[in-house]
Length: 379
Image 1 (spheres, rainbow, N blue to C red):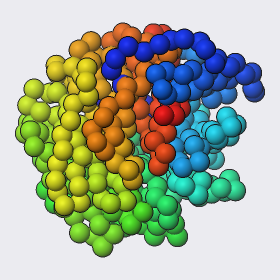
Image 2: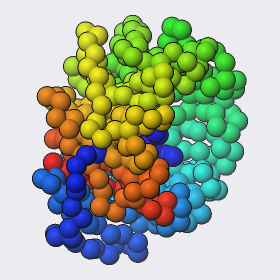
Image 3: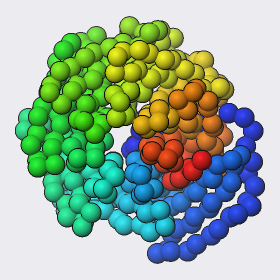
């Protein structure tokens, strides 16, 4: 189960009651469909391709319901986008981004003030970070030590309210390292204790809260995943979720983190099954499985992000490896998210991404033709 770019259990209605169709800038539809006490609004970014592996993938959402993500056009080139609560789209193409399949621009995260961060792939397939201000000014950056071959370079995670970014870079040996970048451009790099130093090993930072505490995971020399938190002062605490497997490709993944320091994520057990969890700043774990989650290899439950009320967004794969989004309240109540247009075959379905303070969730779904589409879910 992966996040952008390339993520819930009872019956859902596919009623078209309340359906609205709007034509805008060529290719765009918006379908607002009530589904069991929630509304799912499906949309396409203008210019999205309509073939397999093309289309719209939505990542993060802020308090004002502005979302960011990326779409792949008919040539497979990525373009970042911003979508406001009114449905207005702005395309984001960073100067220097490549124009071949798999290259281009990806908008990854947006904070409350509307500042966007992301990364772009140049014509050599190297990744570089960027920040886009509310006025549209784009500042590009690359972490010192980042490699310059295809697949290497600088990648971003989330951005907090002060404009500090958490992310990772890949060096010339293919090793991952974490970093933070302040709103003034100061970059601090770090490696979690125990992180491996071989190819596809090392430290991956992703989540960050308002105080600058970063959540992430590292891959050790044996290929096992372990979670960590790093304070703004540089103190790193590593952890393993109860039940996490200890073989290569297993272990603990840490995702989003809220103001109180509670993070969410998932662990992979000894049988290759995924399970969600939340971990408080004091180190207390609560593990969970979404109703309907499969129990086979590469099936199960993943936590993605958590807001300040303790509501978690995530995805589960059922016994047929079909994806379903979900929200989980702080009391442990689950609500399933199935976009009406989502496919119901293997590796198809609905995936949940960001969650804001109101519990609105952004995400995307994969239809039966293998095309991606964005959605907004409001409770």
